[in-house]
Length: 333
Ligand code: SAM
Ligand code: DTB
Ligand code: SF4
Image (cartoon, rainbow, N blue to C red):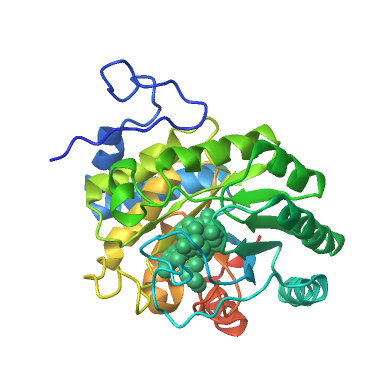
C-alpha cells in the first residue's frame, strides 16, 4: 500500500521535517480509510446520525450551474471536455453578457434554486475579466439568490474584488488526493489550488471545494482527498462530490466505471468527516439510477446541481428532480 501524505491544507499545522502527516490533523488518512472499510450499513448509519445531528433530515439545497465562458481552456485536466488539449467537440465561446446571465438566474430562481453558480473555463481570470464577472455577480445578487463562481486560480486582490461585488461562495476543487494529482493535471500543482483557497478565505468568502471520484484512483486516494478537505481549518462549507462524467476525447474516457456503492461510501465519509458542510451530490447524476441517488441522500448528501445542464454535459431536468424529490419525500432547503 502506498503511504499517502497530507499536502499542507489551508491553515492547518504543517508537516514535520520528515514529511509525516501532522499528528494534529483532525482526520488522519488511516482514520478516513477506516471509515471507507466499515460494513456498508454501519457506514450509512453513522452518516445518517451525523447528518440528522446537524441538518434537517429531508431537506436538500438546490444550486443551478451556468457556464459563463465555455471551452478553450489552456489547462490539461484529464477529465475535462473544455481543455484545448483534447478534441471533445466543445466549442469555445466568449464571456456571456449580463442579460443572458440574468435570464438564466431568473429561470433558476423560479424553479426553486437558491444558489446560482457561474463557471468559466479559465486557468486564471485576468483583472479585466474580474470586473466583468463582478457585474454578473451583482445581477445575480439583485435577484435575491446566493452567488457562486468558479473561475480558476485567483489572487487575493481578485478574491477581494469578487467579495466586494457580493459573491458568497467560490468553488475551487482539490479534485483528487495530492499523490494522484500529477496523473490527472500537469499544468498546475496542488499547492496552486490551496493558495487560491487561502485567498478566498482571506477575502471572507465561503469556500466550496470538493473533488471527483471514478478517475481510476484507489480507495486510499479517495480517503486522501477527503482527509485533505476535512483537515482544512475551517473545512469547506460546501463540498461537491463529483462522479467523473466520461467525455469522449478526454484521456479518462473509457475507464472502468467506479462501483456505485463506492461512490455512496465517498459521500458518507464526506458527511461524517465534515459534519456541518453541505455535501453536494454533483456531476454524474444523469448516469446514476434513482436508487443510487437515494442512497447518496441517505449517506448525507444535502445539495444537488439542479437544471438540465452542468457546464457542458447533461444533468436531470427540473421536472425529473421534482418527481424524484416527491418520491423520496425531500424538500428544497
Ligand atoms: N476552470 C476552473 C477550474 O478548473 O477550477 C473552473 C471550472 S472547472 C470545469 C470546475 C470543476 O468541474 C473541476 O474542478 C472539476 O472538479 C469539475 N469537472 C470538470 N469536468 C468534469 C467531469 N468530466 N466530470 C466531473 N467533474 C468535472
Ligand atoms: C463542481 O464541483 N462540479 C461542477 C461545478 N463544480 C462547476 C462542474 C461539473 C462539470 C461536469 C462536466 C461538464 O459539464 O463540463
Ligand atoms: Fe480548464 Fe477548469 Fe477544465 Fe481544468 S477543469 S481544463 S482548469 S475548465
